Image 1 (cartoon, rainbow, N blue to C red):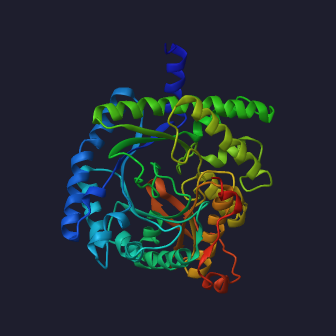
Image 2: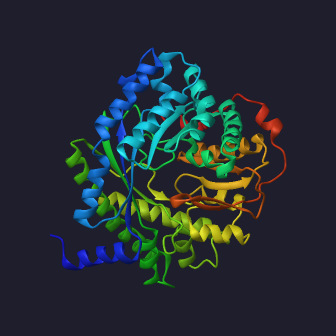
Image 3: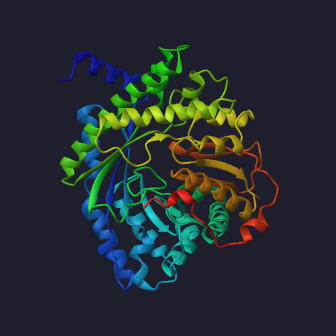
Amino acid sequence: MIQRNEILQTIEMIDQQHLDIRTITMGISLLDCADTDIGRSCTKVYDKICRLAGNLVKTGEDIEAEFGIPIVNKRVSVTPIALVGAATGAKSYVPYAEALDRAAKQIGVNFLGGFSALVQKGMTESDRVLISSIPEALSETDFVCSSVNVGSTRAGINMDAVAEMGRVIRRAAGLTADQGGMACAKLVVFCNAVEDNPFMAGAFHGVGEPECEIHVGVSGPGVVEHALKAVRGQSFDVAAETIKKTAFRITRMGQLVAQEAAHRLDVPFGIVDLSLAPTPAVGDSVAAILEELGLESVGAPGTTAALAMLNDAVKKGGVMASSHVGGLSGAFIPVSEDAGMIAAAENGKLTLEKLEAMTCVCSVGLDMIAVPGDTPAETISAVIADECAIGMVNNKTTAVRIIPAPGKTVGDRVDFGGLLGTAPVMPVNTCSPAEFIARGGRIPAPLHSLKN
């Protein structure tokens, strides 16, 4: 039985503390859309997405109106296109991106993810075609997002793919120079990518998933910050317990919305991803949570420890609230999407190196970071390699979403608008890793990957 005070607490969290459903994401398998003719395959892709996700946006809006719970984004994720297009023999997969973009516009979703390839142990010809198509695909479409998984704990790190992704990111930035390198904001490079992630830009529908399913991503940094204010100065035991209980309440709301959406759309419920995903709005910041724990500023000594506690407590609270917690579930630290992170970076209190240390204990990794436009491709690749190493050794998902902002230098800003926010251009170590990246090959998997 739901108690009156629980209802009032939820209303307060939504009304005053920025609690929302960040996304309802429908995952769709496109394996049956494969064809030897890329034109026919693209038509199948478009038709299937429109058929299965045609009512996704309306369903989300209906639930939002009936339950009074804000649902910020409605999204679709699909089977990695490198798998779908393999039979075509095509030399470019840009037509797939255009078909995905048309479908996204037709059904009215905010983003569509899955222009992706999984190359942690090596690349097929189809993978190579997809990766080479990414700059044009993202610069010529509005809603398509791309991801490439270049490493895993089981396989190691594909350094040939890492090197290529540095060049791809530079080309993508150049093709959208008039938008501050916007294409790079829709591109993620992963290690240990998960198959049921509802968050963009890294979402894709894994081959181990069903034909179609509904995932929900829940957020609520403002709710956690508000809860911690009530226990200011008390021990970390009390703080951790407070975060855990708050995460439980947030996840229960996500579970309710996910099950309702799945029922109305007549597809299976996949997972609830409880990720504290911030927005540029004041009062909706992960950095503010860390500062509420006693740090003068995010980036100060102690930041990594505070983030580790936050991430762990969020996961524990979420797992107790739902039998199907998945995706990434934890705390995100995207610089451009968090007002506190932006301020700390602009004031020189938060550096790229400190962010890398923080990614050892949080969800995902170096996210929405703008760097000078003349940053060499090899440096970008080396940043990716470092982040992949953290993920590989620690058996966790890590990722890089980095924007070499054309024509910009340290101290400038790049404005992407909406949830993507504003990115301050951060300095990058100028020591060259070119010879390191030029070695190629694979960095072997760690010993503890041998668990059979």
